Structure formats: structure tokens, C-alpha cells
Image (tube, rainbow, N blue to C red; front, side, top):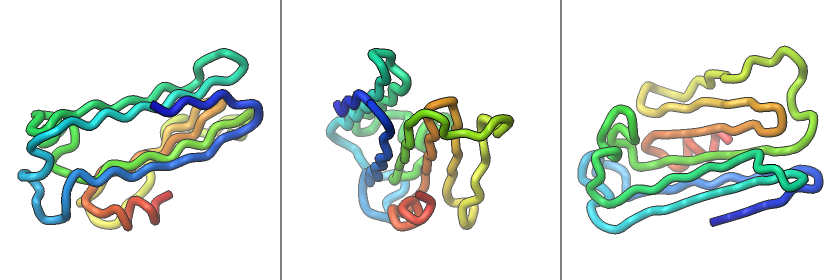
Length: 127
């Protein structure tokens, strides 16, 4: 688990590949993945992000989970005064082709970008 206590600001990103391209429904059959990131400011938790998957888990192929994609990534920027007043909280971000999904969530002290797809390179380009 990664924990940060912020005095000013933080920016970080990760890309996780659960197998090589082309395996679609046959990737990550055994093992376990657990990732967590917590960010606090002034002793107050402002970000708590977690993922826990087991090999063969139904969430790997379910449309409410990873939907058969094997690459998941996230980028987080945290700090005071990140957002101008009136900015929408959830911003769609176009991604090339319909083979991937991406979203941006904006909170008062956090901006988070998410990617779910089949290419670590496309994920990196999004960030």
C-alpha cells in the first residue's frame, strides 16, 4: 500500500498489465493482485483507491468490472486549488476506438484519470 501525507501537492500514475495483448478472456487465471493508494492532507483522508482481483475472478470479464480488458491505469493529481470554479465533476475523455474506456473525475483537491483497455501505450498517452 502506498500512503502519502501531503503538505503541498502530489502527482502519480500507474499502469497495470494483467497479461499480454490478444489473450482477452484467458489472462490472469491464477494469483492475486492487490493495490491501494491513500492520500491525506492535514490528517484528513482525501483519497482512498483500492483494487483487489483474484485470478479467474468474474470481475475480469464482467461489464461492471474489467470487461475482458487486461490493462488498467490511473493518474492522480492532488493539491489545493486545482479546479476552477464551475468545472464539471466528471469529464468524459475520448479515447481512440471503442476498445478502451477512460474518465476524469474532479474533486476539490483531487483530479483522477482512469483508463481501462488493451494497450499500456494508449494508457500512457492518455496521461
